[in-house]
Image (cartoon, rainbow, N blue to C red):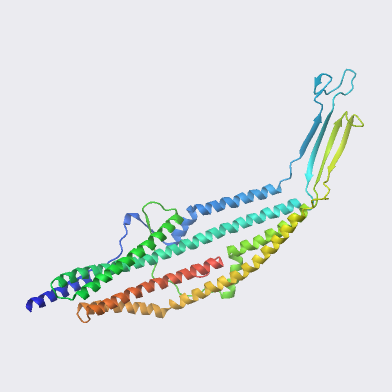
Length: 433
C-alpha cells in the first residue's frame, strides 16, 4: 500500500511538472531564414518587384504608342513611268541634236485624304484602348494586392494555430511520458493512458493539415513578393483588429465603387469602345479621296503636261454594310453587359457589406471579453488539476474545449480581416480599416 501511494504521488508530481514546464512552448522557425514583415512592408516589396504588374505597365505603354501611330498621316505615294528603251538606247531623255525633247516620262505624287473624320475616330478608339489597358493594370494590381493581404493574414492565423498546437503537443507529450511510467506501474487505468495517446494522434493530424495549408500560403506569398530560397515570410500582426463599419454608408460605398471598381469601369469603357467602333464603321462607308499633282513629258496632247489627279472610289457594291451591322450588334451586346455589371456591382457591394457587418458583430467587445475570461479559466483549470481538484478526464475535456475556443478566436479574427479585404476589393479603395 505504501509503495502504491508513493508511485501514485510520483505520477501526480510528473503530471504537474509536465504541465508547468510546457506552459509557454511556442512554434520555432529558423531565425536565419525568417523574413519578418509588416503588411505595409510587404505591399512595398510587392509594388517594387512584381513582374506581372511590370508586364501590365508595358502593355499600357504599348497602347499609348498606338495612339501616336493613329495620329500619323498616311505617307504620300510617288508614281513614275518612263521609257526604258528606244532608238537603240536606254532611258532616252533630254534633247536631241535639233533641241527637241526626246524620251518620255511621267511623275505623280498622291496623298490619301481620309473623309468623314475617320482619323479622329481612330484616335478615339486608340485612346479608349489606353484607358482599358490602364484599368486592366488596376485590375491586376487590385487582385494581386487582395491575394497578398489574404495570404498575409492567413499565414498569421495558421501561425497562431501552429503555436497553439505546439504548446498543446508539448503538454501532451510530457503528460503522456509521465502517464506511461504510471501505467507501467499499474497506477492508472489503460483507458486514461489511451485517451491521452488518442489526443496526441489527433493533434499530430491537425498539425500536419495546418502545416500543409501554411506551406501553400507561404508559396503564394513568396511568389508575389519575388522571394526565393529557403526563406519563411513571417507576418508581423497583432491579435486585435478594429471591429467597426466604414464611416461612409452603404449607398455611398456603392457610389464610390462605381468610380473605382476596376471590373465595372472596364465594362464602361468596353461599351464606349463599341460605340466608337460603330461610328468608325459608318465613317468607313464614306469613300476616301486621293489627290496629287502630276507631270507628263512627251506623251500627252502637249509636250509638257501639268495636271491634278483625283481618285474617288464609287461606293456601289461595298458600303461596309456587314461591318456596320456587326458593330451595331456588338454595341447592343456591350450595353446589355454594362447593365448587368451595374447590377452585379451593387449586389457585390451589398454582399461584402453584410459579411463585414456579421464579422464586426462577432468580434464585438463582449466576445473579446469572453475569450479573455476563457483563457483565464483555462489557466485556473491547469492549476486545479495540479492541485488534484479535478480528474484527468475533466482536464482533458477542458483541454479540448480550450483548443477549439482558441482556434475559433483566431478564425473569427481572420474572418474580420478577410471581410474588410473583400469590401475594399469590391469598392476599389480602402474604406474599411
